[in-house]
Length: 372
Ligand SMILES: Cc1cc2nc3c(=O)[nH]c(=O)nc-3n(C[C@H](O)[C@H](O)[C@H](O)COP(=O)(O)O)c2cc1C
Image 1: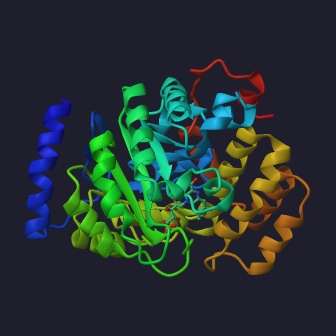
Image 2: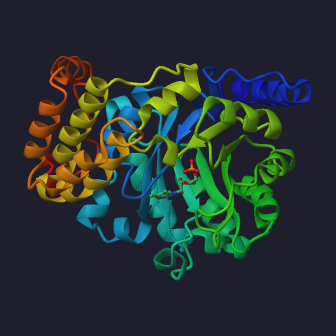
Image 3: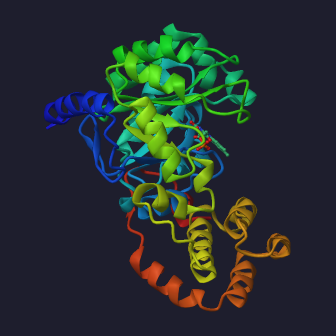
């Protein structure tokens, strides 16, 4: 099956690119033996990609979702909070868990834990620009140390049976083309797919993602490439897919508090959600996050989501200010329902449809599953 899927991809991708046939965003593609049902991947985002975010992403049409980056050192030391990131629900698949670190042996050990937890793909972070990570030799720094980067990919690929993917930036400095030199070597070392966010680490999130580099990477490697950066609409997704030959797009900030963007990109459904729908999705998100993180952690974590959900002209600005002042998530839910009473019915339907079945595959401390 793997060979068939791979050869099919190799035959169809260049053909599509050569003829500029528009790619059907609802079509499936393969990462090794893993079938990804649509061409939209939900980006890994630290402080955002909790289970509720990933499950919601799958519900709205993302073909693949990712955990936020997980420290291999944290997994090695059995840090309870880090282990909590390996909690995977059965309706998240296919799902990638992303790990970061700089030691090949520790990364291999972490990858085995990720595989045991039920991840379909182990993703390696060579893109994080944050100093706390780069100063340890991990994240985007590895684009400047290709030998070590290759040793990491090779050690991880040997350690697990599931496919290994790598997510990277263009390089460390503005204008860098490091990804084009490192990318093919990472594929040779065992990466089954590469995701490129073509900004430099120095740029952080400023400027624009330069997808001409994505096109160059597609041409340089014999593996699928996922285009990441500034994809916020179906029109943009189609333009980037057509101009780069990438296999799929990854969506990050555009999906924050806005799962409807995923539906628009995948299906072309431009219908804006009404207030009841927005509130119902937000309440479901709040409840799931409280279950996952516990009330104390969740109430702080969730504050940024209120602005994301209720902004975009959906509710007046002072309403968000009011919510962030409230003491408990129960009080937030109560206030939301007062503003949109019709959300009760929508919520009941959503909750019925998304009953959670946990895949408990690791012997983790009970508190992680209890949600605090
Ligand atoms: C809040 C936040 C957290 C992020 N955390 C991660 C992460 O843990 N791992 C990673 O590879 N990229 C991370 N990223 C980068 C995104 O995955 C993505 O590459 C970037 O946001 C560009 O895509 P976008 O323009 O669609 O947002 C993060 C981005 C944001 C905004």
